[in-house]
Every structure is written in structure tokens, then in C-alpha cells.
Length: 567
Image (cartoon, one colour):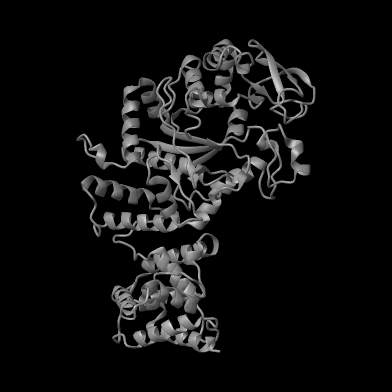
């Protein structure tokens, strides 16, 4: 980027954020020194309590592209995702046998056995369900374990500072949530019981700063979903001896890890919520500037939810798809596009069971055409933003020219007609949708679109896009007399079309003219044709469908249906 002041209106939102982050680092001496010594850490964290839904991917991709844009500005930016695997197992996982796993309620995820062989723990298994797909999705990210950070002493300094300043931490809670707030009276640390290993059932009551020891009890009344063992005694909080409650832990991680940027969902950024509390603890107790987009006590904006049909996504309630399913379903560039095309403060509302996938493909193709100058943008700002977006969503090496574009509904139609992905590809060439000569990368791009069409047809496509073409051996045999009469005339119309007709628009107009000349409603022609060809009252756009099947073959199928329906 040049030294001249950039036109922010011509920048993608991630580039705008990177500029703001760079300016903030340069203004703050603490951050300037931190970045010079350790680099600019973009941080995120996820509790691996079960299957992670695709909405979490929005945060990960946001962190990834912001780190990339910071690197483009010359900053030594790194994105790291931490598994919050020291958190306790706090509710039964619907996918697991309760007889086997309910015994671990209250224990850290890192200490619970994996439900699947080959993983060190419950936490590692669920974390890797998602992270093993990061490379395919183009997310450049390092991984770490919060439990391991506690064990290796990364947070020891913050543990001592917090426990030496308990009254200040409790005052933050009382300021935010009132004098009766339970957290405003408790010791802000959860000891890991030295007897039963549970971390959710302990209650610390005394801190001996000189000895560096906490007195605690493992009780049955701390939470209502796990019982403690009754043990009591002194224990060290350091080197994995326990953990902070969430809001305190969030604040402690920032100086402990040197975090400069960390986003989260808007639920955490609500007024008086967990980000507000963490910010106040960071400022008042730890003397550390909360990470961007926060500033002092001010939280800044969190990113909006990923919704399905207007409802917040939740895999635990069977709403939507998991992150792993999303990566396996979509071409990765398209999934990144879905998560990055809107600003973080805009809701992503995407319902795969409606026709949102068709719209997404069209939007992605338009972005690519604008980037390569095939379609005009509304202005130069949009052209620049769409080009930046194209570069940010690209996973593999970017081609020098546009890829062959095939609409998803055309790919699905051809796939259902030919019943073969390779045959559908050949049909695209035959119909002129693709050039006869196409390079390897171009074919691979088309085949990915056909693969997506196959997955869409098999899992999400609505009835209007689903059909099975009849054959001459098994034609439609239940046409009414009226339908047979209409189609007899329609067959004669098709036979009289000019040889080599290849313009579906011309055929579309011809079908309407055919109906007018015979004083028929066009929908009567359409419904009779769909009935005879796919045994459905509706179907794909008829003229394009006929051109795809072939005019001669369509006529033969219609005639076979007429003959089979005769008494």
C-alpha cells in the first residue's frame, strides 16, 4: 500500500480493520513494544465441548483475513486458535452414551478420554474435528491448548496478580452486576481438586500469598450438574493447579499471551457482558490494553451470528450444519466467500434447504467476473472491493483469467438428465456452455461445480429442482386425453423447428407463440410437458430443459408417453 492516505471506501472491511489496528499499535507505546518484541498476535479460542457448527467458522475466517491484511501492511501478524480444553464438561453431550461420559461431568475436557480412538482426550477430538480442515479452507493458523498454557506456567504471573488483588476483581463484578452478585463475593479461581480431578465443583476461600497456596473445598452445592468429592485442603494454583472463571480468564490471557487483536460474537460484546467485564479486569487489575476492537472499557463491536432461516444456528438442536460438514459440502473458496462477503456486523442468514446455495453461486461468479473486468461494477470502489474479496477468498494459486462459469441449476439439471458427472461435463461442451478445448484447471473448476450440484441435489435441493427424466423404454403412461392432445400438437411443433436451433430464448418465445395460436394457456403446455418428461407438474425452465435433453429426444419421449397413455 502506498504512503498516501488510502481511500477506505475502496477497501474490503478486513483491510480497513488492518489499517485501524496498525494505527492503534503505533499510538500505544505498550502495544508498540509488544509487537516489536513478539509480533502482532491475532487470537481466538474455542471450547471443544462437542460438534462445532459452521457459524464458528465465521470468527476463524475473520481472524485469518485480518491477520493476512495486517501482514500486507508489513506487520508481523500471526493468528493462533486456542482450545479451551481446561474448561469443565458441564452438560451431557447428545452424541455420547451418558452411562460412559456423565461420570466426567465437572472435569476438564483435557482429562476426559476421547470418544474416538486416536486422540489424546475428549477436548482434542472435538477441537481437531474442525481444525483438521483449516488448511483446506485456507486458514493460516497456529494451534495451542489453554490447559497446556496453564500447566507450563504461561498464566502464572496473571494468577498471582489476580489473587493478590481479589477485592479489585470482585469490585468489577459488583460494579457491573450489583452488590449481590455471587462472583462479587467469591475467590476468582477454580482449583482442580487434587482428589477427584474435578474443576467445576471446588470453592476456594483463602489465599496465602506468601506460600502461594489456596484453601478450597470440593463440594456438592457449587453447581447443580456435578457433585464434588468432599475433599478440602490447600493447593497451589500455579502450573495447572486450576483455572480462572471465564471472564477473568479472558482478561488474563491477553497479557499472558500478548494478544493485540481478538474478536468474538456479539453475545459476548453485549452491554455489561463478558467482554465488558474482561476489559475492566484487564485495565483495573492487570494494567493491559484490551485487544482490538475494544479500547479501554469500551467493548467495540462483536460479529453477528450465522443464522439458518432467521434462527441462530445450533448443532445441539439439529439446526444447520457443522463446520466440518460445511468444509466438505462447499468448495472452500465459496465457503470463505459466504463468511467474508458481508461485514462482521451483518448477520449471515443462510438456509441450505431453501435456494440460498443457488444465490451464493451466482454472487460468487459475479464477484469473479467483476474482478476480471467481464462485468461492470457500479463504481470504482466496488471494483476494488470485489477484487480484494476475490483475493481473500482464494485458497489455491489464483488463475490469470476467469474460470469457466456454470450456474448451479444448469449443472444440477444436466446431472439429473445424464446421471453421470462426466456425461454432464460432456453435455456442457455439446450445448456450447463450455469450449471444446479447456485446460486442466478449467475442467477441475467445472467439475467442482458439478460435484457441488450433486451434493445439493442429494441433500438440500427443493422439489422444484428435483426430477428424473423418463426413458423411451419406460415413458410416462398416465397422460390425460387433454394432455395427449396438447402434446401431439407440441410434437409437431418441435419437429418443425429449424434444424440446428440452439437459442433457448428463441425456443421459449416459440412455445408461447405455439400456445397463443392454438388458444391454449401456456401453463397447460408446460404442465403437460413436465408430466410427460419428468412425471412432475413443474420443473426446470422448459425451453432450456428441452435444449438440454435435445429437441429430437424430447419429441421421442413425448410421443412415447402419448402412445403409452392411449387406451
